[in-house]
Length: 258
Length: 313
Image 1 (tube, rainbow over the protein chains, first blue to last red):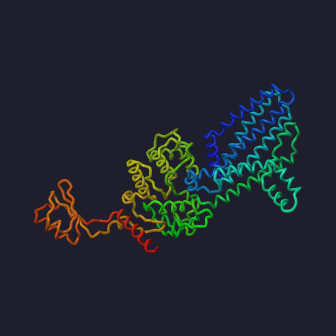
Image 2: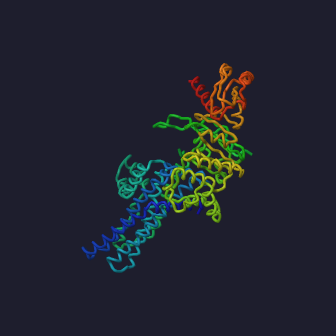
């Protein structure tokens, strides 16, 4: 990897750590241990199901919130505070800055997810006292969650490259919500007629299909995930994130830093 | 080869809600800065100094025109590795310490890893911040941040340095140190291009200056040339506290200061003034022509520009 991108990514990661972003892990740990103790007391059969569902959903939501709230400030905050001036006046290309920022945020989320995953497995061990082979499926769900983060990060960065942090947050969060129901939107497009069919179809394919990344429920029920879905989701996430990042680069390359 | 050639750089912003109203921040600017010069870019606030520097740094794009730095296109990464830039009122990543920040900038500027740590300590010492290890930038005063800004601009030993208002936020001692630093950079053969509205700094430091007002270049030249024009007045100083009546009759502006009198008279009256002092047996100390200061040249240029603008309207 280009060294300058690595330096920018590393600095972005350091910023997140110094700004105490990883403190969310404490809230996550409290939530999960509380839930595990509570569920262990009130149920016998479904405690594992509840812990996996709750744990993975929390991993996803905590990560998405971090991705949006850090991602929306990655570029706009640097312009507003003028910290960019002393970076871009060096031999750093604008696209390198965007890609470095993206990788730094993605790295932060991967590290965050790693620690949360340990928490999920510990809670699981607490309620079931053992691990079974099917528990390895949780790793696939975590992988999909990380792919989802890549998409959300790239979208936040895209909005951050031309909009204010507040508007960027609204745009990114709206797309996350709509994207989580993308399958329903596609079904609706299939049933609609005339111009609304065209509009719904266009919207359904434009918004990120995040519902395809949600396999939490099926994994909690120990249902296997098709290899084809893993491949499809990987390619889709990489393609979508690349497109969104390209858009961010295109906008940022032409922007005056007043 | 000139260090900096500005070839008709021009910037017009689109302002207003629908961005339909053009606002010209910089009229086509032609300027050449020679290698090894300290060049002052002078102008009042809002004159277009920062816009020019931002254009040269590639932070904003020109409406037209181009520039060459060290003989190459100004946006080439190879050129950027050889220039240093201090923005106006710099702000840095405040979660970092000065050492971490400079280490990071050293990485981005391609300073070899083996030299980086030594170089960071060296420049921090050079700007008067040798003992700030472990202190995050959020705890730095405005003057300390300005010093860090200067340190990051010279960290990678650039050939051309651009400073935007380098004395801003500094106390008199700090300003003196920065002036010394600029002299040192010149001594090392570097080219220094700095914007300021503090004319005394420019007069002390610069080989040449340019004056910009409302986005237009109003004058450029060597400081000595601009300030050497005689105003047609002479300054006569004599020992004593008495002002001869004949001197007053010449229309001299006289001021008594201690045991000396200083009088400004028209240079045509020089012989008459000397005769008047002889007649009154006053001891003459000196006679010198009154020269234009950079400040009076600057003010006159701006007044002339205002008058021209008024007539045009």
